[in-house]
Length: 77
Image 1: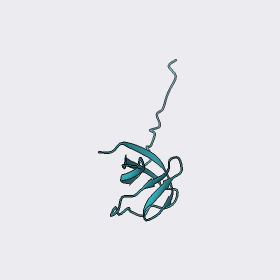
Image 2: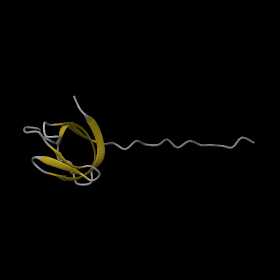
Image 3: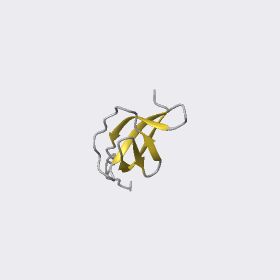
Image 4: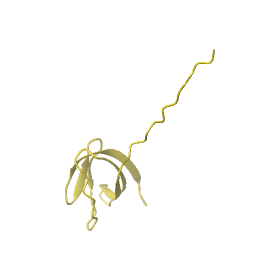
């Protein structure tokens, strides 16, 4: 079960860890195959902590920014 979720901008991806701009380094567990995301991609990461307190990715997905609906607001006369 995930300990937490973090949303951030991917600044680097390596074989054993990823780096998010606002969080820092998050380890990738052995055998986890991560889709290649480009640098600057917004991602959502579910993570847990290992026995040493290191954050470890449980899942990573591309974050789709929410679209704000534009409403026509009219002042009542």
